[in-house]
Structures are given as structure tokens and as C-alpha cells.
Length: 247
Image (spheres, rainbow, N blue to C red):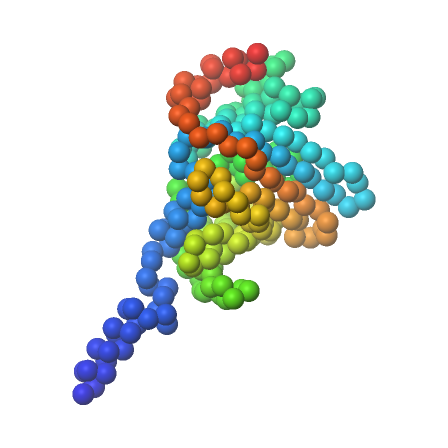
């Protein structure tokens, strides 16, 4: 009789909500989150960033971003006019900046600030699944929805953040919010994923709000706009080709 009860308990654990943490691997959850955050095809998208500081006028910047898989990104500055023509090129873990009046590219890190609370890697690199090892910390219920709470630890020091705590809805794998940490363990910024809308035939967050955890009112808002899906030639992502984009 005890064996029958034990077998029933094991079966309930496998298929029941009490053991839902075992139903899907953390790596698979993160891959599904990445599929929501960014189309897994070549695309070009308009990105606007507005940076806010207390008692100061907002600062805005606009970019044209070309993405080819998880390891190739070009960020072309469209506005402000004083920075127009500046280009960032990401190839795998390498990031370079190209300027119209400078002959040689400048090597950058993913962690460096692009504008306000937004780092280079926040725009250039959207690859949680490739850059982090994930584990499920717990599940939480927020506003009548169930969420995985995951800890993402960087596989190396070249990515944007050493650690990420991420909330992803269980049913849809939509990211709700995230906390981004430095190697020292210091909380760098809080991020919320908002305004889900159709982009490339899928509902995705079109507005990201990145807030400073210490200074109230210090934040940056990333808005994703027009998107064009279509193959982007590999030659575009060569360092020598950047001169053609700048011209």
C-alpha cells in the first residue's frame, strides 16, 4: 500500500503544479524569452532612447539597428545631428565604434554607457541564452499571473552584466522585469518590459524602462519602432565596410 501511495506521489510531482520547476529546463526558458525579446531572423529596427534626470531636460537619441543572428549587430546613430554617422559594430564579443572624422575604429566594451542608463550591450547584444547560465530561483504570482524568477550568471566577463535576475511569465515566457548586477554584486539598474505589440509577427515588448536603483527619477526609456525583416548580407558586418555606411 505504501508503495502505491509513493508511486502516486511521484506521478503527481512529475505532472502536477507542485513540481512545475522540473517541467522545463532553465536554458530552455531563457531561449524562449530571447525569442520573445528579439526576432530570430535578420532584421533592421528603429530605436529611440530618451534619458531622464531630475530637474533637467530629457535627452533623446535615435538609432537604426541592424541585427543578423545573436552575434552580429550594427548601430547607426541617426540623431542627434552632432553624433550622426557614428556607428557601433558588434561581432561576437567584440565591439568597435566608428566615427566620420576618425580614421581608426575605437574598441569599446559592452558595459560602457551609450546614453543615460543604457549601455552599449543593451542595444547591441540580446543574447541571454548564449551569454548566461541560468537557474530557477523560485516562482512568483504577480497580478494573477505566474512567473519564473531566474538567476542568470555570465559565462565570461565580456558581456554587459555579471548577473541578471529575470521575471518571465510561465505561460507566454514574456519578460516582465529584470535586475542587472555588476561583478561586485552591486545592483546597476532595474528594467521593466512594457507595451507589448506586434513586431515581426509576434507580440514583443516595444518599451523598456531602465531605472537607476538609487536616484529617483533617473531613468532611460528604450522604444522600438519600425521593423524590416529581411536578409542582411554578411559583408555589412566587416570592419572595412563601415566606411561605406559612414559616407
